[in-house]
Amino acid sequence: MSKDLTADDFLPHVNKTFRVRGGHHALTLARVEGPAGGSAQSPSGIRQPFNLIFSGPPRDVLEEGLYTVDVENGPQFELHIIPIYTPARDRQDYQAAFN
Image (cartoon, rainbow, N blue to C red; front, top):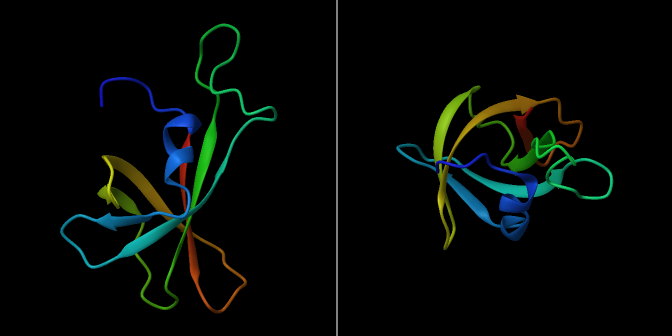
């Protein structure tokens, strides 16, 4: 994609599976965290920061890195995915941050 991605680009993919290309991991986009009010851009036209929060199976942790992911019945994205602290024992959560 040649344009800057915004939170709005990911909202239609909440609860969909993102498969890591060339690997076996499949993560579900649990939520998109963004600025209050849901605005994708500031009045000056600058993209607002947002985070994607994914959930995956426990124990088989995907290492931090840049991955190409294919969305179930959708596009592909290149994301820097980071495993994050997950107190729940039934899953492992991940984050992709856009500043």
